Image (cartoon, rainbow, N blue to C red; front, side, top):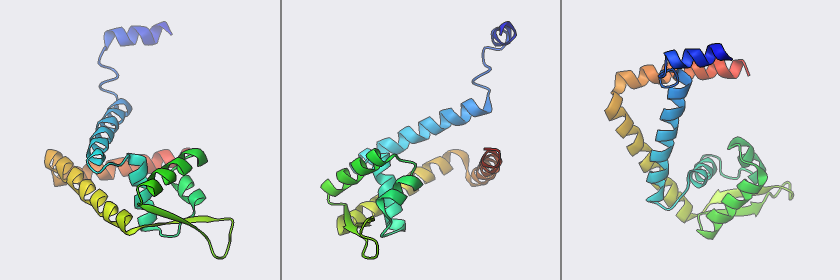
Amino acid sequence: MQDSAFHFEKNPDFFQNNLGFLIGRVHRLLKHRWELSLKEIELTPSQAGLLSLVAKKPGISLRKAGRELANDPTNSHRIVLDLESKQLLQRYKDLKDKRLVCMKLTPLGLAKFEQIQILAKKNQEKLLDQIGQPNQQKLMDLLLEVQKDLEKNE
């Protein structure tokens, strides 16, 4: 234990120069930027995520959506209730399996999803302006490689 404490004293920038720390910091900054963007259209990231998933997979069950978004059932239900109160989402019983609660976007939900896409594109363009297209592709390739390796070793 003393050895690692000694190492830190010799290299106080150890964490700032650590790849995992840097990726985590960038993630938090990008997440914060996204949260601020979504506030403009009165959504949270969780709400935007669910709207986007339902737009992509109309009729998806509440349970399956929760699993895909890694939300526990209580939070998934709360997000759905919030979106229903804004008239962006509608729940209905599956005709084949009455136990399943499925979801679809309302016309207002579809319009809100279009706003999400516009914001996502603006955020992407802002990031691209900062690092440039060639560097973005290199970064994406490297991050996908790291992701694949980490998932393989889980």
